[in-house]
Length: 530
DNA sequence: CTGGGGATGGGGCCC
DNA sequence: AGGGCCCCATCCCCA
Image 1 (cartoon, chains in turn purple, yellow, green):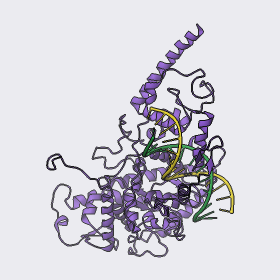
Image 2: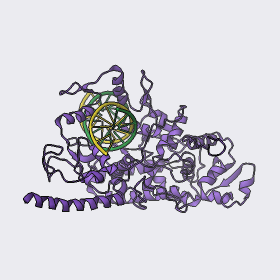
Image 3: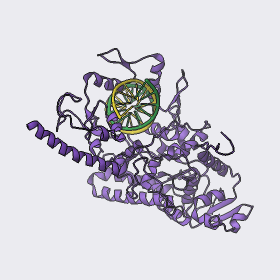
């Protein structure tokens, strides 16, 4: 290989962008290299012109960074001061935090101020996000107001509002850098929300508490919007959403609309397979990063580690780290040789109960998961899903195995023993049917849907798609790792490329094939009659 | 492409 | 409320 000509290789450093941002944020907090000071009603925020120009259209214009103009602001060597009294200190603080962490953490009550500030400063993605949230919330509140059972919820909401209001500094009072005791949030010197508290999610540190408690005892009342918009350009590591992400986010969205109330109509469990288990009305907590409602007491710290990449539980034998203690415990079985789930029908033993369950289906020969198109039956649901994603059934499918020899003891007709999960019959999986309500992706049949509109004018992506970007596993995680003084975040998250399940061309082919089969089957029946 | 094992994240139950 | 334990759904990887 001649190194000069075609020996060019690109070595990606996925953590670079997030590390860069994190470093800039550290410099900002330390006041290092700050060449711009923003002031708002007495509060001063040292910052960097380049960062502000990168984030805000307003500053881009101001500094002439947009069209190559050399404005005074842009060329001066000293530290400039930009007075922004039209922007509330809290909102400015939140926007600065967003600029340097890609996460917007604000209180519900401050949403409008942030929206206003984002519009003023030309931070489109934040403005869009705030608009969406405000819109949703208003709808939600209307629903609640009409619902008689919502009394408790609304009371809590009032409390929240009260807390939030009392937490806001008086507009006239100078913006303190150290907030008063009654105004816990938004100390700009401290990373917000999950950023600051992420190291404390370690289960070993009981002081950690829930994320919502970290700033004053009330649960999270604001929203943390992970800013994909402006930082997406930096974040080359942004991965397309996995089907899992999409699906779960769909579920989440449903839950989110419930607003975490104590007695919402519970969305169906996954596939309804859980059956008897009822969701106990445990205090749901909202993840400040992905907005997901986490049910179950004490589960939020566990969930947060999926964002931070923190793996506090290390195997003493091989050093592998885990996010959860129970996973480590299972892992340890590999070292101890313990396989607590023996198959009663054969010598096989398993680490997990569900492995045994899967395995036993082999003995029984049960293949309860049938492809509705080619009617091939599988013992495992995920294998059926994989089968359908691979579209292989189109080539292999011939005739409906209506008589015995086929897989499974029963006939496939109608309400036979073949269980086809409703989700699999749904031609358009949720992840692709409603996750992109505004701009449906150009689903090509060979790759993930396009999440990022190429149109530069559409500076923001739909807010609903933000959680799908899984940025929390990228830039965000890096900040936290850095904050914890740990080496760079693990990149174990694979987030494999999703298959465009149910993409229109494929769906059309399926439907076509299905129609063809109906005809074929009729012919077959006629033959049988003869 | 399929079968199988293992990993991961979320929720429920219980202490 | 927090955490342990368990189960479930889903995904990844390998043969």
